Length: 118
Image (tube, rainbow, N blue to C red; front, side, top):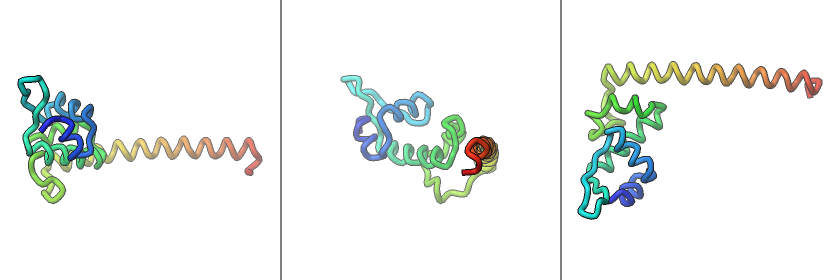
């Protein structure tokens, strides 16, 4: 299938698909006219990439799962490496949330002080 069809079937933009390909997460062949042609299994592979990205992992994190992107990721027990990556990513997200909460609290206090608590 061509990139437009893969994009339609997965809900991922052609630009993102080219990015995944540049990262080595999906592959394509080239037709005689130079168009990218993807195998049918690319649909599941892209779905798994999106599953991991939506779970908060980065594209670099997803690269560690390259060998298992063709399986049923949501129902497969995570590996030790997968758990380690998830824990690291969770710690990063927790730190970001804490920083944003602190900034929000500072802004709320400043606004309250400037408006007399109104």
